[in-house]
Image (tube, rainbow, N blue to C red; front, side, top):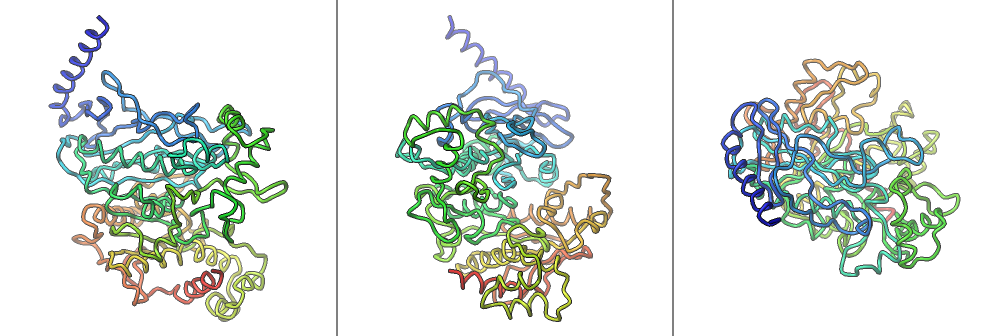
Length: 538
């Protein structure tokens, strides 16, 4: 009898799907799509259909904490996909000590997508998959900033998703290394990202997307993730173009901590396993065996998150959880892969902002101290950053941080790709909205390009956006969409964006005055001395 009831439920669901399928093009209809796991009912918002809170992997809880993402169970009937699901567990901004932010949970592996209303299966629309930033410890795919409405209006399906964060996303421990030896270890966030891309490959055609035309893009930690996916063998073939916004590209920033102590290097003198052991000790968990691991899995999610930081030992400096060079999933850093030409051969759009952060990665209290950090390149650095001795120190510090962490590594990456005859489009975002000029007096700050890329200018703290802001947003959004469609950002009526040529000192810049085009790259002397400093430290 039970089998008959289940069978009837499936027949009724499929019948409803068949009827609703006809109505997907009707304004106000509730679109229903059949995925590999079951039927999903989204919602129409004007001329855009939205599907939210779609599970792409099982909740990574209990025995599956610190394990690769597990398959989701199919469901019977039609699953509501009109609301965002939980963000992945994180301390976030404003969370009380010992708690996680409201709306976040360890059950947080969900994705969302936007597409033109009425799109039919088989339409083969280009697909863009956004990987959010947040230092690998906060953020989600459901932030209002990441609405895919403008992408959908120009014929692109946009996908956003959550992935594991902090110690839940990157963690190593001796007992974990021994458990399930056939599985990759440590980089659970990257495993989630690959699982989301596998879901897209398997299901996106049902929504009208083309699984053979997928562009991944991300900013900050999301940009670092794109670098990693370009060089992780398991990600090969899951995407066909890549965009990196302020994602670095060198080994020195969040690109691969060794999993075991014997593999440490100058960038990462403390291994991931050592950090894991220190975390266990902090919670009075002794030993490094399966019993200790069981106790770690028994900790509450809030105890695991705990701000997302660990130290390199008693009294040590805080260390953010981040990518691990585990040898199975992440087999090398992005920099070493690029130097050897082992990256994925896909078109690349890459760039950074003109004044990313004021300090934090490079710190100094005076010009003299800052310039001394360049060692043997001190004189070249002085000429590049303070030729006449009148440079503002705060601005100098901002530019050194920006150049070291983002601008020069982006140039290095672009050169590595062009050396393999892979088309690269490189940008510099210098535009600052009129309402933000007092806050961003040295240039465009970290992540400030995102509202323009999404053509989604959300007013905050009374800030207003003017006509010029809206024009730049439409321009950038269109470039990104054109690149996703064809591998080339250019299109009718747009300033021409040439393929990057490493022999020329030019950069495509979104300038402070709102103009855009290929211009002389005034940063050359600065980036050259940063590059020399990198090589001197090898």
